[in-house]
Image (cartoon, rainbow over all chains, first blue to last red; front, side, top):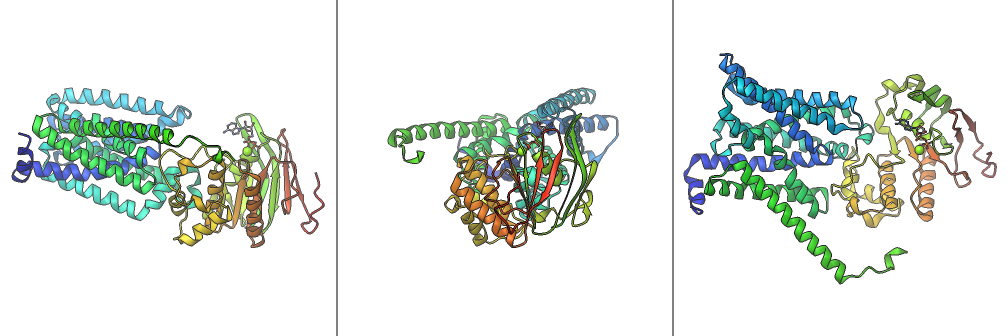
Length: 294
Length: 223
Ligand SMILES: Nc1ncnc2c1ncn2[C@@H]1O[C@H](COP(=O)(O)OP(=O)(O)O)[C@@H](O)[C@H]1O
Ligand SMILES: [Mg+2]
């Protein structure tokens, strides 16, 4: 049962597709995630995810009415709604300047309520489970290609504008002096995030999007010594989680998104634990001297 | 860079922090802004940087209205507080400097800026692990990296030791002699060590005085 994962991996098309999709998302999620973390927007992925879900439920609802939009692919309306959610966050943010997270809670609530309503109206509550927890093992070719295109676009943007993206994320107030239009940057970043979130939603589910983006980064931050090393370590953690998560999901028939995130969390805890032990040892070996107090 | 400020007023809500401020600087001038805490020095700087919208009065850079000004990359700025900066994510000083400059600055350019601030050994340090003073010097080095035409420094030496302060003012003088316009904020009473050409004094009721000083005579510092 455990070993059949490896044989099936190369005999079953769906396994290969799942692995391929997972490995691409495994790079994409922490790369975007690190910028999200730096910009202190960890909650926004969840917010956009919930709004993406509204788009999906509306799309399903419309199709029961016989109205087909975006070729019956709910994902696209999901992306559109995700962008709308992002704009709403900005809007509410203006009225709660010092409590920015309030705006996200408001938008998440609207998103959850609306998607519940439209899912029930569309009488497709059965598919809700997949959207909540993901279904990477049932992913189609169409979808794998879409993920690949998203990844290529995001990486191209990072190669061309990486400097500006990193600099402005660390410090928005200096953006002007770097010749970056902050408003435009925020807007484009939100669109990029909306697309990535919507793509992640179909594979890992709305409840686990931010985990996939944030947890590997959170673990890497504990051991990274530079921006570059932290990002690379986050990608490695993320890929390990995808691979072993898929193995777990297949071998024990548990939801794939949940399995991937569980491994992520285990890695994070292991890193925190090891780091704590090591720093304790260091303190014991090198008692603090007065040398540095000069 | 030529800077003209005409009758600038600024208030937070009903509280007027700047009351009709006017001044004029030419390329290569060195303005010191002084005043007690809370007199609006940083507020004025934020007007100059376009972070506070200018509604009453006007600011011109090289005769261009600030609202239409585009060449912000000619400015270098060291903020008084670094609260805007997100520290917790690891990034080395070297990485920080290289993403902070638009042009492909060579490693030697970065090394020179760090050396000027006496923090060459911090090159590969994680910014998270720097002390307040080291951080401030890193930001100062960053502001010099892009060869700015105007350098705006808001109490840049507030948290660094005496020797680095000396280094820093020497470097500022050097840049000023090369034609860079300097605007320096200080709440320090003694300006004896600064080779400034103009001084703007701000008071807590929003008023201010603007004076020109003969630079050849360093002994004459009028308070
Ligand atoms: N964003 C703000 N909103 C409201 N009041 C402010 C804000 N920033 C500064 N102030 C107030 O304006 C006054 C001038 O502040 P500031 O320009 O920082 O003074 P300085 O830099 O001279 O110490 C202070 O009383 C301060 O409390
Ligand atoms: Mg100030």
